[in-house]
Image (tube, rainbow, N blue to C red; front, side, top):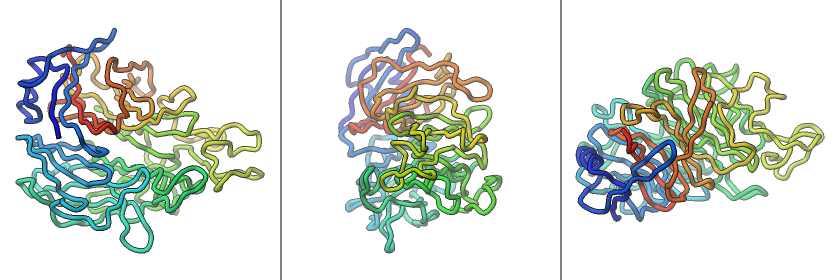
Length: 409
């Protein structure tokens, strides 16, 4: 794994040395200009295998997942160790498998990590007769040399078992997990598996956002509709790939990978319906009974991401991608003095769109302005995380982890 820097000013080096992520005596110093924003970019790691998500410990250690390998850590001195996953990890997970969009996906650390050392991952598992997605809790030792005490706290998140007209097995699994710093609960995003009935089915966990405690039990206040699984916080989702919590209010916002005709960012409310229902309505026929890419209506209009005609009380999107889908992925709020002039903006990454967009929100969470971060390499943005230094850390499908900082701070 190589380490290099590009676009790093001397002040950046001082910050990076504090958190132990980069040796700053390599590479040149340049700034990337935009008419409204200047960003310095540093390549922290490279030559990774499908990095999917990141999480930082209070001491600066960076835990990261690779979809087909598992969970690893980069400690503050630059040492990299494989902790949990396929052969060669400190703790092997014989049930982990990688198929389609699924494998070892999200990672999150417990708010009390310094005391309990709990780390959580979202992974595909072949335990039992039916493949599932699940959330696993691990205990990381204080030297970051191993993990123990595996506990599978959610075991019944649906997994797409086989190919159909719309894609192969393992697609639309969701997979982002984040603890809210406001209520202390773990939020888990899941996908619709190309199953038309799943998003609106309150007895199953696909196409949902879950809200649970550290043991996997339903959180208080989920307001799940009557008869539904109490772990469900919101439902009616397609394939949520990002979730973040607005500074000041704590409200959860999700970024959702849409079909060919849209992507959406939506603020969540407990018990809310995201309005996605790709099941065919009466008189309509769709391949595999999934109308997500076509129309579920007799008049032939495309199935909307948020169907306000059918669900007038559905959650209102803050922003959509103007009638196209570019694979909206992760999101994170900018917070702290590092982001003078940009604090409170929501950063949203795109996969096919290969860019990061900053959303300015009004008091109720609706988008009033968008700004694209200029001059970044055109890469599929897989994860966005705010580091302990308040910089944005980005995992890309090209196998790199970047650090982005505001050059004008």
